[in-house]
Structure formats: structure tokens, C-alpha cells
Amino acid sequence: MTEVLERYHRNTLLFGAEGQRKLGRTNVAVIGAGGLGSPLIQHLALLGVKRITSVDPEEIDESNRNRSIGTRYTDPVPGSSKVDIVSRMVREINPGVEAIGLKCGLISENAFAAVRGSDWVLGCFDEDGPRAILNELCQAYKKQYIDLASDVPMPGIYGGRVCVSINGNGCLDCLDLLDRNAVRRYIESSERLIHEDKIYGISKTVLEEKGPSVSPVNGVVAALAATEFMVAVTGLRAPTRLLEYRGWESKVVTIVDEPRSECILCKGIRGKPEEADVERYLKLQHLRQD
Image 1 (cartoon, rainbow, N blue to C red):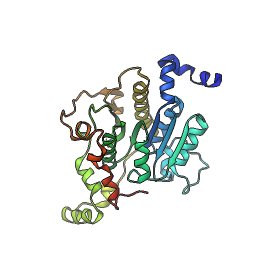
Image 2 (cartoon, one colour):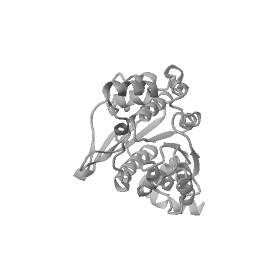
Image 3 (cartoon, helix red, strand yellow):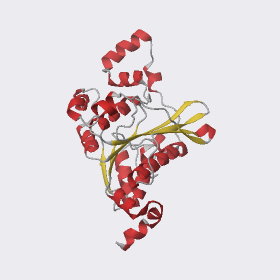
């Protein structure tokens, strides 16, 4: 007990012993264990949450080594799953935190169960398709949700954002943070996409091209998200709904846009899983990532 108290002494100086106890009772699911998810998980382990369930279907490749926190030089490529790496990191940082790694994607029975069984969900996606589905899932099951995004939309412009969607007070949909065409294309079957691409002359290679991603930028976004999670759980202050990190300007901006008052997700289906029927996505075999 003395060792535990000493470990979190500097935490309790900020938000008190009761705040630390609240963290120690909190189960968190992190969906995506890559460049954003891995530094976020590191912060959660250091904060001392009860359990971290990481969800990611991928193994690391050589291009991940520039930003994957917890990856060792000796970890084999291929052969090292991202969730195994972050779970190992959690155990080595803080064995008092339970670490569960699920090698699957969001559209799977195990990932949906992990979301349902967690108190907080933090999404770390590159794409708006799964981001939109996780947003819907969290609203349906009344989960506190934080979405992280890093972005380099054009040369010299880089940064990201953190959206805190809790208590039905705004979500990714009613804050207009989703590219609806990208969401639609994610959900569509491959046959329909091929047909559409032929009509409009869209190159699949261009659509799948990935941009820059570096550790310091991801780290800032992850730290912002971890801070908003920390203040919300401990009661240190109310979390900020939407933060935008403008790395090229060296600043963080609070976005004060108001969400739509009649949002079908965070107002309509929140806490109504039967009505929402989010499990319908599990029936789309082209999306399954078991």
C-alpha cells in the first residue's frame, strides 16, 4: 500500500486522493494502438487506470517504428502485433493496471464487447469510416467517448484535434467533424466502390495513399486527449469539448462551435442500443475484422 501511495503521490498533489481512486476504478478501451494510440496508452498506464483494453488488427511494419511507442528494435517485423506491444508496455510501466490486447478491428464481436464493457472509449483512427461507427456505438451504449485525430492536410500544415463527447453534449456527427463521403465509401461494398470508381475515374491508389505521421505531433494530440480524460474522471475541471492543435502555428485552440440541438445520435439514440441497432454493422461481412 505504501508503494502504491508513493507511486501516485505527485498525481494526488494535483487532483487529490479521491481523484486517483476514481482513475483506479476506470476501465478504458482504446481503439487503435498505433501512432496515436500507443502514446495515449502510455499516459493512461502512468495515470493508473484500472484496465486498458487495446483493439487493433495490425502488426507493426518498418514504417511504424518512427512513432510506435513501446516498440523495441528487436521486435520482429512481421510478427509483432500492435496490441501485444502496447500491452507489454503497460505491464512494464505499471503492473497494477490490467492490460488486455484484442487483435481485431472495430467491426468485430470482441471490439463491440470491449466498448460495451468499458467506462470510457478513446478512438485513434486514420479514417472517418470507423470513426463514425465508433461514435454511433458509443452514443447507443451511453459511453463517454474521446476521439483523437492527427492530420497533415497539406505541406507545412500539421496538427490534429481532440473531441470529447460525453453526457449527450455534442458528438462527431453534430459537430460536423466527419467527411460523410469518406464514411459512405467505407461502408459501401467493394463491388459498389469499383463500379463508382469506374464511373468517376477515381484511382484506388490515390484514395489509399497515406500522408506524413511523426511522433511529436501524435504525442501532443495524445497528451491533450489524456489530459481531458484525466480532468473529466478526477473532477479537476470540466473537459473541453473540442480542441484543435495547430502545430504549424505553435498553438492549441478551443473550438466553441455549438453542436446541433436535435442530433439523432447524441440526443436521439443515446442510451438506446435496441433502437440504434449498431450491431447491424457486424452483419456487413466486407467490414468484419475479427
